[in-house]
Image (cartoon, rainbow, N blue to C red; front, side):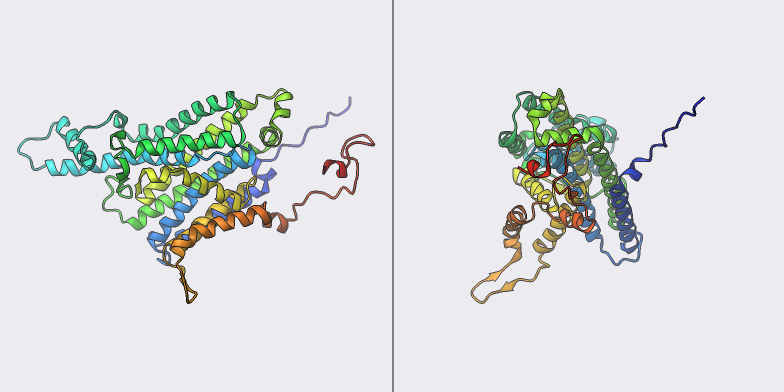
Length: 418
């Protein structure tokens, strides 16, 4: 009886994709290095404010991953993903503001002759939070703001539902290209204009503030809190990168790339294009919201200006500069532009005196960013990530006119380029 050959065991995912392992290793080394050098648990070389900047940068890298997945791999140029980023920030910010204000109100009522009733505590919290917009009652949107588990669920459920409904309506109507980009931008603008109103239930243009103060941990120094959020941001980025790499690999990844390149042909082959696009759009919206939920407690404040359409345009610029269609390119682009923006707009970049005019980078940074985007589009369409491709020698094979198909006379390289 002939021996039956056994198939070799399947390698783990990270072993089959060494770039993922390299990225996770570099992220772990970076996290360890910052921990050793920071004030909270290390030698104090890196200040607490810069640790927060690094933590926020990791969150921006995560939302850039989401943008690269939906645009670079699936071909959907969404100009509204920073809206989901902001929704995640508002969801966690509501609990942070409520819980912190509740502690303040209870402490102020502790000296009253009679113990305060739950209604008196609730009224005091509402007055403290909404007095700035002339209100003293909780709007319905704050119904579960007292519960951390429910607000954490809202970080995922609310943007996921919005993306699901919006995507279903748009994709089933087969809206594509620039028209879809305009729709996503219109959605973002409508949400921002609504949040600017005082009766929106989220304090209008005042936004939510004091988010860096964790309730019940007033004795914990900010140097320690900043490290907690930095670790959480690094963990979220690592897991997000792993999930995105899993999505773009295998058959699923091949299908969404095909949708990007030729949607009509993929539909002709029998694939449910709308289902694939809807999954990617919803998944990336949730990813962006999680990034926002980690970003704004480190920023300390969130207001409707953070959701303005220009923010989503900046996000597309980051991905383009880093190199869309490459997960590591999106991370590189977001980190590079974010840190450079902090340096230019934070007054650290020296002004340039031309004699007749002084270039102040605080005012000229956005112009420099726009010129960089144009230059990358014209001269380096693969972005910064393309340099890594050159270093790793990941170029297309030189076929020299060889047959591209199994039979002689199949499509040749020269024909394929036409």
